[in-house]
Image (cartoon, rainbow, N blue to C red; front, side):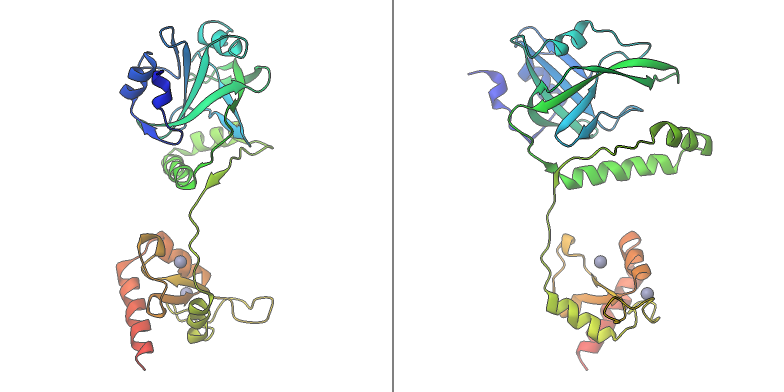
Length: 275
Ligand SMILES: [Zn+2]
Ligand SMILES: [Zn+2]
């Protein structure tokens, strides 16, 4: 039995697993293994200025070479010729440092093309981009991986100096936005529990106690229901865990989830339901 058949799509592997399974090197984004006739591609979203972008189910993968123009040799050549050769190309994606998610075997879905990108020293250079598709179809990844990755990147952008933010914003704007399918868990909350909370609030936010900021299309005060103990963290969909908040306070609870606010809301709903 071939070693690579042990791999499970969607599972997370460590770098040493990849080295052991493919008998490839332990560094770099494109790892050629003569022993297993494979080319392992690592698409690391946590690194680099330029991202390999998904457009639907096609990954636009940037070739090898960190400085100067990339050339169609070595691993780039292997990948460019992989549809006609007996080399199998396997893809891993990294959303959190050192965690390699196996995505499956890929093939070139169209001809590689060239694009101008800046290298690490800020010099414009020509890179090779390989459009890749998964051989057995795309199995959507977990949405939370993408969300956490985005949070991490936002954090970096937050801490960058103004000139860097401006420069990156100018360089990275795009007309066509990268998009991909992802799966997420949806909690089916009870509409009556939610409606009850809104009626109990009677048009006033239960945190700031101000009147709702606007009326909805039906002319009713607009409020949002919120679970004091978040459902995603095991909270229940019950009357004594549900409040109606104005959009500002709702956002505040999700951004800060301040313990004092939580206690205030819990006391409020529990006292009210005892009336
Ligand atoms: Zn409020
Ligand atoms: Zn909420």
